[in-house]
Length: 489
Image 1: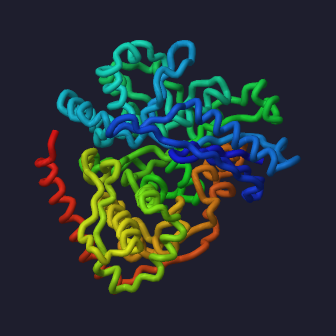
Image 2: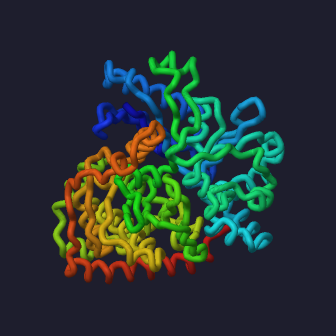
Image 3: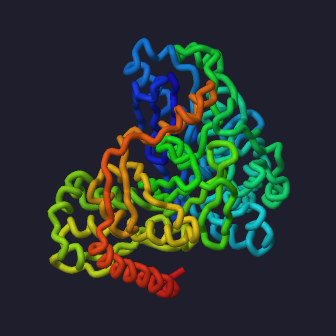
């Protein structure tokens, strides 16, 4: 048996698979994001550890006697978060998350002072990444910065609690802006730009390598063997790629979770920093990937449902009753509730509805939201440049993949076939597969594509109508940029 643990933004999920790749148990625990100020997003790392304990207890109950057969653990997690530890292992402040944009001024300063940085790290300098967060801490919390002994990513903090080892791996480390992505190793030059050295960083292993073994006292507490190894694991999207079998060049998937991602596998580093597309290491050796990222995807629908006091399933049912004519004249929604990354790199972008009227029902608001997310994905696909020519179809994962309406809409907007898989295709599954590989599994047998649940073919007629609305969507963003200049400071 192999255990995969995924620290998401809204929940910690875990599952257990057997040597046939079947899921024998799964469980999750809810996580909350704290937003003490505008542009801030934080979590307490201790809550991740508590949630991990809750999930392990649930899994043990489900798995029964099979639980003791677990041989390896894999980790997946939200990327870019800055967990700061002192020399005694004390967490110095809440983790600054991937969707925290407070470091936008520091990104501007880094770009001006170190124009070489973008080429060295192969990516645009954006406030979501880890390095600008540390620049912000150095400027605004210098006492804390001076006490930093280790900087860890979320899943690697969990690894430390599991094994006592400070270890990361290239797919997650690539999102810090401190990694030489071609060499898959820390860059001393990039670290020095933010006042850090290799001593502040965890060591690196590949995602399918062994990073350590479970601490004996923890193994005893959890009812596991002390020989259980912990794999390097992966950042959430690279882990999801392993979960859907996207491990070979040209494989692609879309993740429709809190954020929205288009992910394409490459056999070499293909960087274009100016496009806003991320070029990172894959979870497996000798592979890389390109990724366009929007900051708010399924979280937009959750936001709307909270405002309207309606469940997502109920609103989706109401949306399904809308006619094509109603949708053609629906409001247009900009989904930038947390600013935006690809392609705009605009932390000040905001969400908005256009074309609201007295007679607008809430179902049309819901439709506008899922359409706006699909339009933002189209912008991300366009930013991929030549890489988009490799894509023949996309797997759709994440919570939004449960909606047939949304899946078909994405197929129509992107004019690409979209396939969905059983709900198990996730970062936690990818983490479990990486655990299996670390314990001796063979890639060709472990990293299989899961069965297709539903296939959505693009409708060219509907696609033509949506292209007109996409142009309006893009015009509205350009107008918002101009209008923001009139906002009070």
